[in-house]
Length: 524
Ligand code: XMP
Image 1: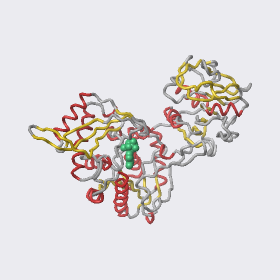
Image 2 (image 1 turned 180 degrees about the vertical axis):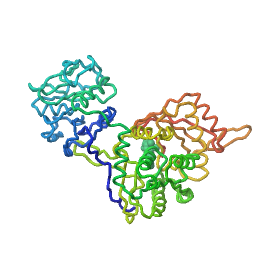
Image 3 (image 1 turned 135 degrees about the vertical axis):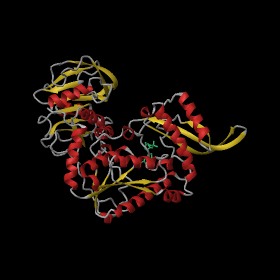
């Protein structure tokens, strides 16, 4: 594959807008802090603790995240906060609070037992700006192995729990606070109110970041950057690429050409249905049916990784062949979202884990396309809110995730057009039934696997020897971990009957009751 195209990213950093800076020390909850702040309609960005960006006037305050590290470690992350502490509002959370305590001359020791789980916080200083209107006592979520055992004179304790005296403190005459609990976690009942006190009351943010304001600024920015150029975008039928396309369509209309490839591994009727709905949305879309090419290249291939490679390679070839026909294209648009671009922070030094999208890696160099990623600042739920604000079809916005290689990795073993047909039928019954039963939106992802297993059955007076399919339905937040959904027995019974009765070639249905880990969501 040829190298990635030049990256002229636009809408990478927001300027002229109030924002909160979150310095990440590697906590599992850092993204959650960002989401809570954004739920307060305040824009925020996550940066690794050792890559502090320029502190311009837009930054109204800084939050230090938690960390798996201990401030007592010899190599503990200790950034230079001299341009921040005492100069602008600062809130340390967990490790952040312990770091600020140590920097001021306080002491942090290993807690007698790890402080984990719910605790009741008593507000000691209800008049403190961070504690305004916080009920007392209030449940908070603790998760730390270290604890602050002494604080300097100038640090005033404003909240305590039974085991943690310095659960919350304020440095006198400074806009600096520390809290050893996690306000971003749902179990901290008044956590969002406390963050609101920080971002509104202390930092003075006005809370004007909203889907509508995002659309307005992004559309304006896209218009300015793209001018009269032509843009190409690969649509997948999923939420991100569709919302990205709608934003671009709003900004530049027909200068956007979308390409939607049928790899023959989509759901039943999906290619035509989705193509129609894109056209109905006013998008300029080219639909390319390349099913035959994919089926031919997958002939005889059984190894899952090999299948993925072939499907990825074929996609790039088909996409490029179409893209090249668009002669004056200058930009390639992608539906990259914020979790894909946040640099993950290891406490031994942040390392970039930027996912490459399968349609970037192989674009021909001679096309000299620059990248435009209108959603690169948004979390998934924000992408949906932006889509909703643009009146996009709720059915499209609420779609379950679907893997790029599609049914190709849900047919175990060799992929053939006949197996695709069988799986499409079974999958269509399962998904339609989930919708009819009102269960679709309660499930994060669902699908059917076609197993390379034949078993004996009876149909009427006939003995059958046919395929087995496995139904899979999971709940998850990001696909990293997942649990199987306890679908009602009646629902499973009806779906199983319907599949066996209607799908020629299937005589047995099983339900997958494995969680991830140790299993994965897909079977290949
Ligand atoms: P696993 O099977 O790893 O899946 O638990 C986690 C999530 O990733 C999706 N997935 C893929 N998506 N290309 C994709 O675009 C792939 O090769 C691929 N493999 C798994 C899967 O559907 C689930 O949402």
